[in-house]
Amino acid sequence: MTGSAKGMTACAVGGLVLVTAYTVALGSNGWLWFAWVVLALLTVGTLLTR
Image (cartoon, rainbow, N blue to C red):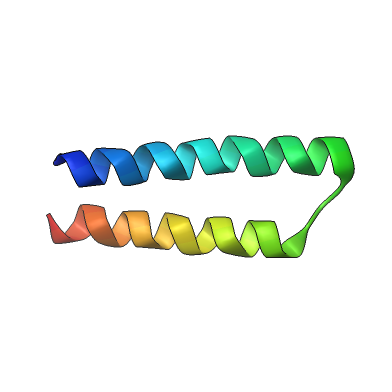
C-alpha cells in the first residue's frame, strides 16, 4: 500500500469515527453520511488502482 492509499484509508476511518460520534451526540445528518460515503468510495478506488 502506497503512502497516498494509507492516508486515504486513515482519513476514511477517522471520518467514520467522527460522523458516528456526531450522530450519537447530536443526531443524524444526511450530508455528513453522504460525504463519508463519497470519501469511502474514493478510498476504495485508490486502493483498487494500485
